Image (cartoon, rainbow, N blue to C red; front, side):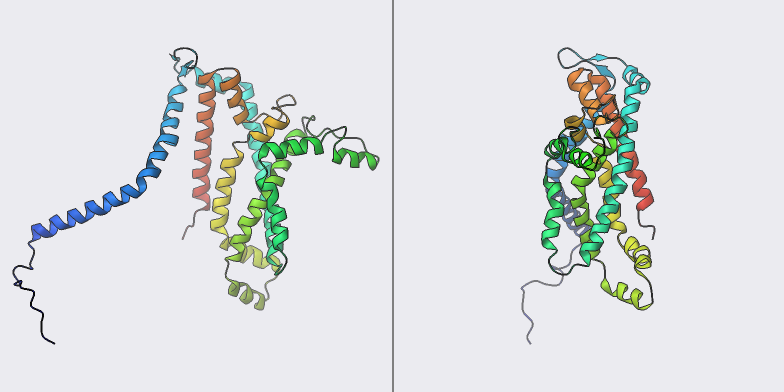
Length: 312
């Protein structure tokens, strides 16, 4: 085959080292600008809706007022008031206790249901839809539904208890039952979501490993402990962090069902922040409590990331 005459000599096709560096810099600059162009909208949203509000929140912890009047610098007074406030400590304790009840319970129930659904080869679609329907209910709607279901006079549950000869139970009016009841409602509402999440993780697991383990004589419990749990580590990593962030912000159910009662036994951090900001008008105190919640979420997320990360 004859060579194609390009009309250029070999010397004309040779680039000097300086030209190589210039073209390399131009290529890197172009790829960097392209990357920032794609990241730009998300970066702007991050700055506008997360970074700036957090900075403003931190600044507000050192001030008071600023809504109907000028803001006044008060130094560390808001921090001292927050740590000295017994109701703030109660709200933190209630939120932690609620999360400790709700997160393990919903994970255990969802995992059991996901394992059961995995064994159903046909006809599982209606069951999945039925399980997921409570997740689609807004928190306030679900709260109002359970307000009637749990009513001490005409609620379905207490009607059944009276029918069995027992005494009605005031689930939302008893200081020892109100918080576990709210946790149970949130578990009911979140079970469908986590069931589908775990089921998706189980479906993606390689079936060859389970067949090999079964041939080697490993029972169901051994396969679950030795195969399922380690292989679902990425799913659990996301689940624990996401569930912690969501549950530490408990507000809707408490606000709709008990408004923090009885005797502040169900008041959460988010509800106390709402009261401080919008009912009491104490911007500095509410900002300080909000910032503490942000720091708590970040610390717990970092700790969970350290404990659950893949150590290979």
